[in-house]
Amino acid sequence: MMSEISVVIITLNEEKNIERCIQSVVDIADEIIVVDSFSTDKTEEICKRYNVRFIKHAFAGYIEQKNWALSQTSYVYVLSLDADEALSDQLKLSIQQIKNDFQFDGYQFNRMTNYCGKWIMHSGWYPDRKLRLVDKRLVSWTGINPHDKLEMKPGSRIHHLKGDLLHYSYYSISQHVAQANHFSDITARMLHAKGKKSFLFNILFNPCLKFVRDYFINLGFLDGYYGYVICRISAHATFLKYIKLKQLGKK
Image (cartoon, rainbow, N blue to C red; front, side, top):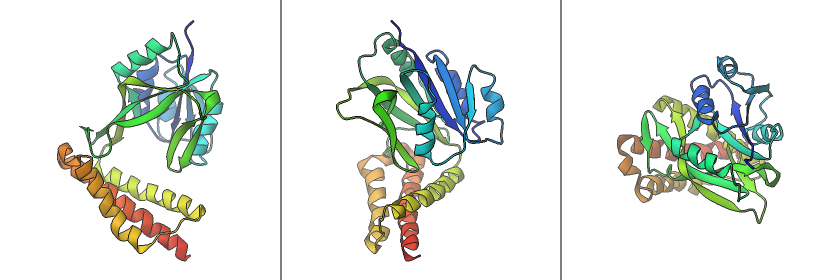
C-alpha cells in the first residue's frame, strides 16, 4: 500500500522561490502545507494557485516555527523543505519509489547549493547531507537558531536517498553579506542565552581556521571565484559571531 506524504514549507516573503519549491513536490505530495509568517509580498497569492493549505503563524524562531509546522501535518511521513529549496528529478524519483515501501524511519539526501547562478560543489557546502523525510512520531527540530536540524529518537533507522535537494541560496553577494550579519546576531544571542563566552582566541583564530578549513581542506578553491567569496564571507561571519557574543558578555 502506498504511503501518504505531507510536505511542509515555512515562508516569509518568498515570492522569488516558493513556486519553484511547490512545483517540485506536487507529483509526490499528498498534502502541501505552507506556514507563513505574515508575508507582505506575493507569497500567499502564488501559493493559492496550487492545492496548498496556507496557514499564517507568527514567527518565534526557526526551530519553534518548524516544530509548530510539523504539528499541523495530517500524515505520518513528512517532507520538510525551505522555500528556497526544490527536489531534483533524481530525488523526486527516489521518493516516488519509496512511497510504495517505507522501510526506514527517516531519509536523508545531499543538498547542492546554487550561489549567484553557480552550483557549489566544495567549500564545505557539498555534499551537505540533510535529514528531511521522516516519520514525524520519531523526530523534532533542534539545534541553535538559526541553524536548525531534524533529530530522530535514538534507535531510529535512517537511509540515504539518491538525488540532490537543490538549494537556491543567494542571488547576490550583498544578500549573502546581509544574511551573515543577520544570522550572526541571532547566533550570538542564542549562545549568550546559553551562558557561552567569547575570548580573544576565538576572535583572532576561529575565523582564520574557518577559512583554511573551507578553502583549502574542503577544496573551496575548486569552486573558483565564488568559492573564494563564500569562504571569505563564512570566515567573516564567524568573526562577527564572536565579537557580538563578546559585546553581549560585556553588557
